[in-house]
Length: 218
Image (cartoon, rainbow, N blue to C red; front, side):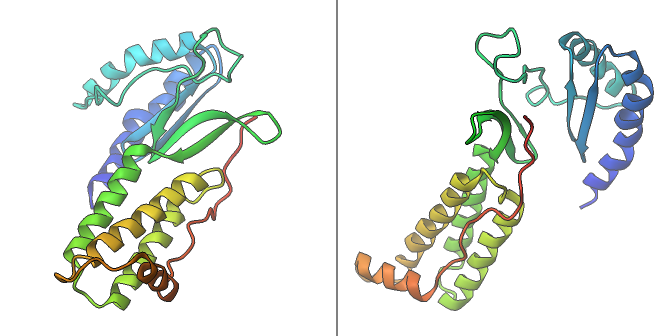
């Protein structure tokens, strides 16, 4: 796939270098740019800095024949709860497949946590459903091997601490889809639940567990 490579090369000049050399020195507070391919987030210490850059960013992109996605580009409040003036509290945002939000830690501190974005979870399970439907007549051992890799691959990306609930939803949803399409392999009657329990014991899927530590901001 060539587009991410081109995005990295092009946006390095259009956005990265411009932000570091031209923008940051004109700001009142600290600011950080995080970009992956053509997706990026800019974090500002002060609201007025954010508003100034937000206003000039479309002009910067237009200079190079680029446009910002109107539905994905927005300015939002992400201050620590209780630190800002917004009575409704900080907003959440999606970036690189994760929803970023403030939550209380087990010790009661406010921390930034990440969980699988709802759209990404639905998309992942939709792809599993399509695969199970198209491959339902393949040998069960082959299906088990492929679906096991899908669980491991999902956890390799989304398996961060604090995201266990979403990981469980993916694995349980995958199992439901697998059972649904296994039941349609023939015109025979639906198998009893006991059969499914024995089947899962014979062909166990890997556990959906966190394998990466999540960065915490207190």
